[in-house]
Length: 475
Image 1 (spheres, rainbow, N blue to C red):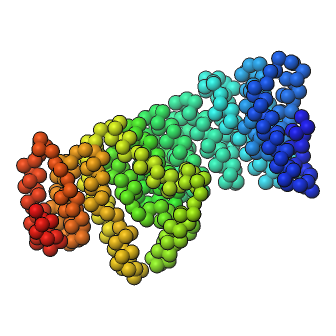
Image 2: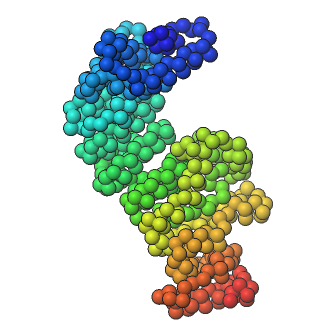
């Protein structure tokens, strides 16, 4: 009790030593964890504990880190879950009533109290054994939704996380709040962290119920009109156009949904392969985050400096940065495990069939990178180092999938088709692809072996005609 009272006085006693306050909070936190294993057979002690916990959760002066352990201790101290949930409702009502009746509450204090309510509800939803058929649990949505209209971004973000937990308790709730979450994801004027949390909430729902991937009406906050939106379309849009952490989170979600079999799309798989082999992906994301994500009209030379600075910053990144959701380092680590797991679970055929799409995406990046490096007058060595190694990518797809014949045939067909177009393929692109073909061992029982030999002959002719490779490479 003494440590609880001390923690409640931390903000009131401004002259207290900060280190002493931290020590008291730490001790209180450990005692609350121990309380979950306490014997509450003594009614007097149990009531005293309930009174202390109630005071902590109703007070805005109690530290945020004590909210979750207090609620979990509160659950253990009650004799039934029904009494515990009712106590939670009483705490929420007391905090809300204080907002309404106090004459001295300013906007900041009101937002803090709203945040406290959402935090309490979030912990309850995370640990409850009940579902939305229980009226006490179902009514908690009434305490979450008002936080969406808060002017405080921290409160809105907490509300999105809390609503995601609420929707996980039942399909009907998930369907009801799907338009709201998708509208939040699609709102370009919203804070990136809030959009990211809404996207993560939708991915959790999609892993439980495939129907969450279907198209639905969602409010476009920019035009205030209802538009048809689906989660796969938003993910594809982020992978193509998003900047900063949104593209990283979208890629992580695609990995999870593809492993679950929720998304079966060669283009998405190809984008993940290209992301994994892009040597400047992590540095580019960090540079975008540092510049606020808005590089329209910015000089390419300045962008190159930002990328170089971000690369150096990455070398100094600590472990926490590497494991945080939205970290490009974390994504690279995840992708290094994803491809083998995907082939093991889903077979190598889809991986092999993504070859053409992989080549198209890499070639587009080569063209874009060439224009950027020429405008910024960067050295040829830097230009080559910044590009994705085509031979490594194709070899990786072939080795990962085990479908050497299919990958070789798609690669040959790609060279033939693209070379026939106006402008054709660059010589260095053809040379890299030919290197990857020369290192493949196609199985003799490959069903399309005659067609592969015919396409291989055409590729030899293209190499000789364009001068992209010598006769040895052509053979």
